[in-house]
Length: 117
Image 1 (cartoon, rainbow, N blue to C red):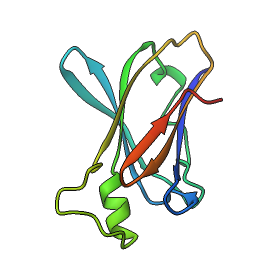
Image 2: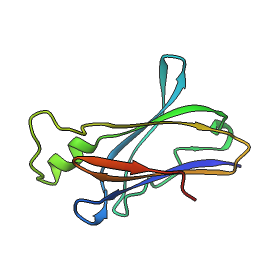
Image 3: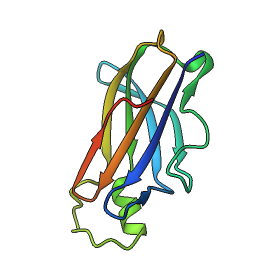
C-alpha cells in the first residue's frame, strides 16, 4: 500500500522545522477538499503519513505549510506582510507508486522541494 509523507527543514536556523501546521488538499479543478492536517514533530516530520491505505489515490494534491506562523513563533522578525506566509506545493500522485515523499527546505525568503524517497 502506498503512502504520502513530508518533512520540513529550516535552512535559516539549520534545524528541523517543528510545530509547523501542514494541510493536505485534494484538487479537483478549482475545488480544494481538505484531506489531512498535522503538525510537524521535533524532527520536522509528521507522526503519520498524510495519505495511506484506501485514501492513497491517483490525483492532484496540494500541501500547504504555515511558514509565517512558524517563523513568528520562533521570534524571527518578519515584515507585516511576510514574503512566505503559506507555502503551497501542488503535485500529482500516481497511486501505482508505493511512496511519495515531499520534503520542504524553508527560510523566510525562499523554499525548495523535490520528490524524495
